[in-house]
Length: 119
Image 1 (cartoon, rainbow, N blue to C red):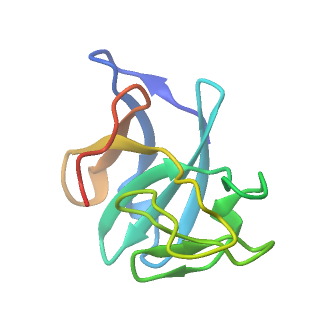
Image 2 (cartoon, helix red, strand yellow):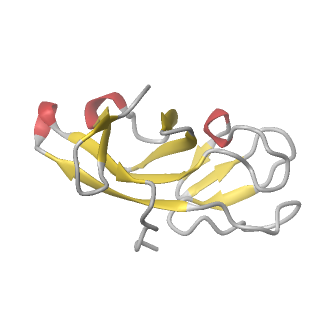
Image 3 (cartoon, helix red, strand yellow):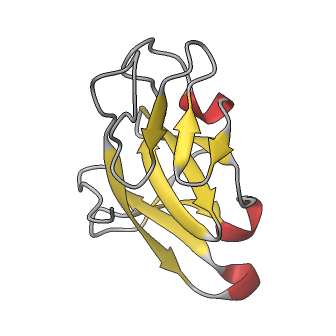
């Protein structure tokens, strides 16, 4: 997926309806790898690259608010980016998002220059 610029720093990156609960989806925003994670209908955006092994987190499993790196099993809280145990010790970045619209028309907007305030 690619992003469309909207102004105010936020860009349109995905339709909410395309992000199934309990899954992570990869998007590229201006060269930054992002994992969009749907936790029971709430969308979170984190850096897609594991801070331990530099592989894609969006290819890992989502369980509740945690996403697991498929390579060595590092788990990160998608609300904060913090690792929940080894081998990762460094957090991944989280990004501010907004939902624009409702129902079938709802879109996910992201600002990669603004840290998320959830968690």
